[in-house]
Length: 181
Length: 368
Image 1 (cartoon, rainbow over the protein chains, first blue to last red):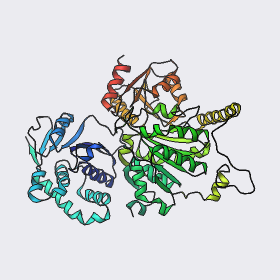
Image 2 (cartoon, rainbow over the protein chains, first blue to last red):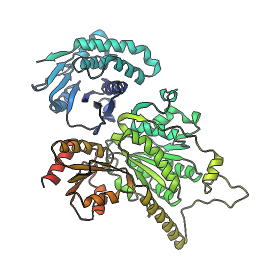
Image 3 (cartoon, rainbow over the protein chains, first blue to last red):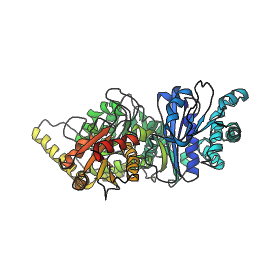
Image 4 (cartoon, helix red, strand yellow):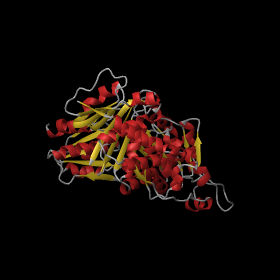
């Protein structure tokens, strides 16, 4: 199995760290992984994206033309990546601030209003974990226990008391995500 | 204390290519790192500062005031037989060229890492391979060569750090790791090399009798200089250097061959472009097109012989680079006109995609 994923949004939404947690989760379940960020000025507020590949085989190119799954957290990212989801693939978007919505009918489109939820419930620190939970509901590519192991591995010890909060966020995301027809 | 210090070297870890270089440098007994930050390689010095190896192995990590300064600090440390290194990205490596020429002329071992970004000029921070000429043809003045390694994975970033130092000391010549921004910034699985202790001063005196570590009464002063006012003396130095480069060409060529045995067409690419090309090879093979890939691992010495061998077997070749076409010249020299050698590349911080390589393969080779 190989899963080729793009996660894109504004810098600060946790795009790169969501990718990192996915990559660590893959590592925890013995897969080959690659994590390829857009780097540089994007980290400081522009549009950031990260390509994550999880595979049972050796990964060739870390650079991709098309993706099995795209997670887009802002309008420019939807416009850039909707066309690059493989037919039959998955597109997940957080509708906050969107004025144009996905139009393709040959892919599975899901909406997760994680930003809206986070603003209402003061959970913006775990926004990316809510979205990751949504992804894992519709594409169970890694097991939750491996996500938690991966989180433990990627977080410094001083943040380990936050693991429970992150696990809760995953479950919130699983409940929030909705299929769009 | 950071997480990594608690782990044994056998553990599979996930890290950036830049981080892997830093960890490998500490583990292989590097004595000193001197650098100046520049994207996309700043994590090398950041990781070293974070690991604080001056507390564990005694390795010095120093941020100089410029790249010119850091390469001359390396020059000084290398003169003392110390395992020393610097790292930078394209514009910074340009600033170092004078020092690199001096280090080559002084026959001193060191490691220079260039995580290339788009140029020319100050350019972009995105990945590039357009410093190939600078690395393998001599970016500084005079007839010298750098042993040049081209990692294509995070694992190789770690492995090549160890290898580059070994080769640099074996031949008393500077070695370069020529990576690109993608390999520097991406995270992959890596197994770090085992710990080797730093050499003691006594060990350095024994193994590197030329080192300028202070003169005992028993011998004449060691002098490291690159100046000869006598031209005949300077030609003798050049003859010795050239003999060394021929030895390196004879002994140290490294490359990877992928699906070449039955190939009608051959792609030649290094670093990230080799990874992207591998995917294009898989796409073409799925359609029954017989394509192979040769990935030079050493750029100097260049794998001329293997490319020459395939020039008698394949219909045509395609070189893929993140440049306007630099390595393609060495491929053409190896092929010497026997088959067409085409080129596809992106420039200025853009990188070829698997589709781009596949399309170039189809239009420039297969359907031509």
